[in-house]
Length: 97
Image (tube, rainbow, N blue to C red):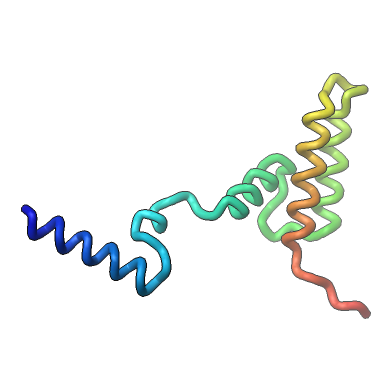
């Protein structure tokens, strides 16, 4: 039993040394940024391959629904704006024509 624990510890250290991450870090849900992007996509209801016009129109629809004048809250508008900004930042840079 002790031998298995020692082998597991050595493998964990080797993984950390070779790959720069502990083995249990590979079991997590992913990076915080990736989770934020997924949450933003769900909030705006856009696909992963959405382009700039898709994101902007989804943001416009969501803000129209959650605006304080329509019974929403400022917090919901701020969340929609943050989701839009994050997804626009994730888009690849377009080359000037």
